Length: 289
Image (spheres, rainbow, N blue to C red):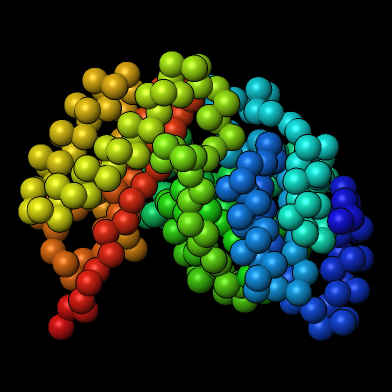
């Protein structure tokens, strides 16, 4: 695996592959990699001739009170994992390479509507930073396919909409969430959990599963969300949101679930210093007439 730190080096390698007619799969990351990230590389290798990944801790998507400076930088370990997984090229630019005129002067890519609620409500400006850097990386790498984990369901939906709106010739592939044996979604932020908190953390997944069962049994959305919030608080969580939404529009739903609907339950909650994120889908079993 080759590692490059400049746009010029990246384009040089990509140009050589393009001349050979090779397809490129891309998995952008912020580093501090775990098995969930590596699953993106595996998915890309199954579809594409060459696989590119990036490690870039993007300052645009961090709020003023978030953990930008504390976010772990583990490039050497990341390189070892990516190489073992069969990644062909790693792009690991410094901030000044991505934003040479400074962060305040950068043109922004904004996806409206889908970014207003959920994480967009609790982390203002976060998704503007995500879509801006992903759009820039898409322009640099020009992959045929790009791979993102489903754990960040709203992010995945936002990026898919950006690709449609801006006419990127890229297939955005959602990869299933990798989990620990007890169901906890893998995340770089799990390392912030204490030993006791780690024992409680799987309750978020368990609450999502219980909420899905309740919806399928006919319980109203208002009852399900109220029960879930109480369960999480009793387990020591500080819920950020627990929202039952249309899986496409991400608009919050009311009433009871019907089998022709595709819904998703989006959840975020703090447990100690860690902010945990997870979701579960309710897939339509028939097509509405």
